[in-house]
Structure formats: structure tokens, C-alpha cells
Length: 388
Picture 1 (spheres, rainbow, N blue to C red):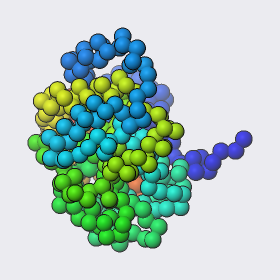
Picture 2: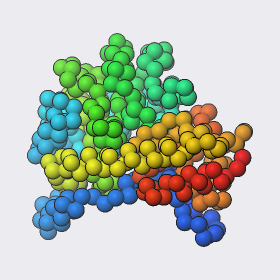
Picture 3: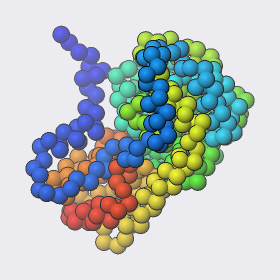
Picture 4: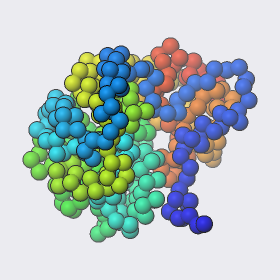
């Protein structure tokens, strides 16, 4: 049988590709330092785990819920958004999803048809253009400007909009750079979307890892936010529930109404046990989240301090609580070549820059989720050890 070229032409999932290198690598006795995947290395809060354990014997946990999620879960999320964003939202603004990735698919298929365009800020999260290519939607990429830390420039974004454009896509805090788009820039991007009657899609998977817990933006306080703004959210990193696939789509009630047509054919609903995990988290774990945010910021600050000491041929370009975006020193070499050498020679695993956008072969993405503070000096020493 034949397969769609829309999928056969898409590159293989980068993390799966890189982790396959581990199988080929000869064990030289060095302990692996994993800077590859943004997965918290700490466990969920013990009280959350205990709460879920009490629910598992309830046969209701094995059933469907409403496609958009239980009303009491979405009510609890409303209260959380009131604290986080100062936002007067309604349960009708939320659809609980199978991770942020499914929320992204819901948003895209609700907004776009094959042949439409989306303006995407590079470097981008690699799953996003993979999905667009599979759906036959064209990504138009705003270039990465190193001096600007890869943050979106509203004027540049606007210059790329055509009659086929249906949305602007931005991730903040950025995956892969860790850089945080300032609230005033997000507001300016919203105004661009409004002028062109398109959507601003903002992926805020890492919104709880902004230092100090600062409010990411004020868009939800605009009474007309739902006409041009769609948010992709995740509780997976926030509550260390990545395997639970705890995502969410936030949009106008009308948008959610139509997105549920796709939700019903994709997943029906987020698993009930995941919904109860989210509810417990937003009801009880603000302090636990703040403590982990502080810990991740300490990791970042220590890494930045160690990495930027004189004598390192690798150069830190941008960073944040979960990620560092690094320029490697190997001329005319791909990021894959350098990432493979790092694994083979000094037992460090990370992702090559080219999977995050065209022309980014000179970079690497490092993730801090799996590396504890005591291991950071050794990780940086190994980068210094690899000579160009």
C-alpha cells in the first residue's frame, strides 16, 4: 500500500532518533548525562500521588467524561487562571486534552485547512512543524536572530502574513531557547493578529517556570481576547505528570464548541485520572510548584555561571529555567554531528539545532529537567573537554 507523502517526508521524532544512538554506543564506563528531553526528574507531589491512589478503586475512573472534561475540573482551572492571569474565564473556555501536543492539533484543525499558512517563530518546537506538514499546512518561518535571543519581532511577523495566513504561532517560554517573550511583545503580536483577522496561538507549556512566577501576559483581561487568541497549555511539567498527558486548550466558547468535534474523533476526552490529578494540583499545589520553579531556576543559574566561564568553546546564546540554546564551535558541521560526538566521546546527550528550524545546524538544545545541581559542573566540564 502507499503512504501519504505528507507523513513520509516528515523527519523522524528527534528525541527518538537521538536516543536510538544510545543503543549503538559502546559503554566506556562514563555515566550518561541526559540533557535531551525536558522531563522533570522529580516525582509528583506525594499528596497528589496518595490522592490518586484513593481514586483508583472507584469504577467511575475507568469511564469517559464529557469531551471537554469534568465541569468541576474546569471550574477549578478557572480559579487557577484567576490567580495566575487575573483572568475572569469560564469553564466553557477550556478543553482538557491528551497533552499540549493534542491541544495544538485541536487548535490547528479548528483554524486551518490544507493549503493555509501559519507564521511560526524560529527556533520552533519541532513537533509543531511536523504536525503542520502532515496536515498539508504551510509553515512560514520568522528567522532566528541571535542578537535578539530568537524572540519574535512583531514587525517581522507582520511582514510574513499573506492572504493565506490563518495564525501566528509562538512558544513562550521558548522551547528550545528558554527565552521568555515579554508581555508587551505578546500584546503587540495580538494586535497584529487582530489587524489581519487571524489567530495568535501561544504555547505556554512552561509558563510556571518564569522566574518569580511573573504573569506571562495580560491578554485574558481584554474582553475581546477570544476573537484572536488561542492558548496551548500543559500541566505535565507543572505537576511532574508528563506521562499522564495533562494538556489543555484555552479559547473562546465558540472556538471550543467547534474544537470538540475534532476532540471527539481524536481522543473523546482526557482520562479521568488525569483530570483529577489536574484538579488536585490547581487546588492544592501552588506552593509546591513555586518551590520547584525556584529549584529549576537554581539549576539554570548554576549552569549559566559554569558554562560562561572563560575557556569554553561552546557559547551560550540564550537560556531559561528549562533550556539552554548553545552555539557549537565546529565549523561546517551539523548539530547532529556534534551531538553524536558529545554522546560517543563524553557521554552527554542533547538535541541538534537543525530540528528546531532551517539553517540552525550550528546550535544545540540542552534541557535541564534531568540534571541535578550537583551534576552540572561535571556536565559543563565535558563540553569543555570536547575540542573542535
